[in-house]
Amino acid sequence: MRTITVKGVGTASTPPDYITIFLNITAQSPDYAKAVDLANSRIEILQNALSAVGFAKEDLKTLVYNVNSDYNNYNERGVFKKKFVGYACHYQLKLSFDFDNKRLSETLTAISESKANAEFSIKFTVKDPEKVSAELLKSATENARQKAEILCAASGANLGELVSINYNWGEIDLYSQSRYCDEARCAVPLAAAPEFTPDDIESSDTATFVWEIV
Image (tube, helix red, strand yellow):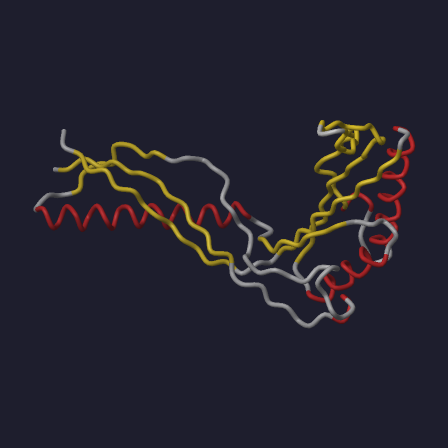
């Protein structure tokens, strides 16, 4: 049986409709329990600040939690050594909501003006990634069949039955490349930030198809 193998490439350009804010909170203390308590108190402060702008406590999701030993490196007569200084309790959290400029500004202002000492970064994405993935796969399939038909027509053959499909179910990056100012870069209060339109999310996916040639 003669076959033809073609890689289909699917592309999509999708406007972001969802925001995810990633937050990091770290508390340090020579005492383990105090480091944990301090970090937890900052989480509570952050939750209260977000509650004031309409979020529920459970909207703030924990991605990472750990407590590590903290050391200082020093040089003693040419020999590098480590000195134990305490414990560092670290939280990584995320907060997601529908894209809205006013809500974004209010949320960032609440975070930056709280005493939680949270570092944050902002990503623009889509609320329904499965829908985008389906569009990419459909586009890749159409692209592969179009290529196969062109190749068969050019070589005087006909495209037969589909023999196999090879697809790698990897995660697709569905984040816009646009960057919104954070507390370290904004020259104006976040609540007064201008309207912001993030760039569309450019995504692609591939699949390999094998057809019989008749």
